[in-house]
Image 1 (tube, rainbow, N blue to C red):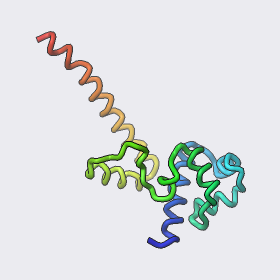
Image 2 (tube, rainbow, N blue to C red; image 1 turned 90 degrees about the vertical axis):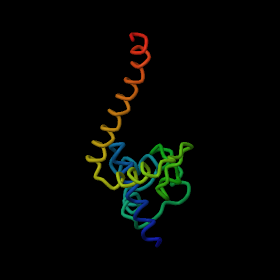
Image 3 (cartoon, rainbow, N blue to C red; image 1 turned 45 degrees about the vertical axis):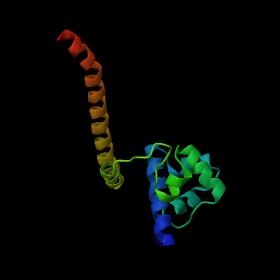
Image 4 (tube, rainbow, N blue to C red; image 1 turned 120 degrees about the vertical axis):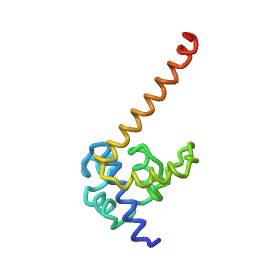
Length: 127
């Protein structure tokens, strides 16, 4: 992978995380005590931030430096199901509206599963 690709991928992840927080580039730049123009260069893939700014970005955006640089999300809970991992990686390429719709669907399925799990002990007693 070329350094240009790494910078572009970093910029895309940074922009997506910023947008998830509903912050403008100016707002995020102020949070890391940087110029708007410099943050814009990070998001456009023209520059990488220095280490201290990278750490600040990870903390402010509630992610890891590893995720910002590589896209790997391994915060202590690795995903072992390869099929799920592949689908989540594909999902990251969706536009934010479609990605949010899929996340809501997943959330609904989790709630459904929890409710069914909570009801089952009572169904057994009623039998």
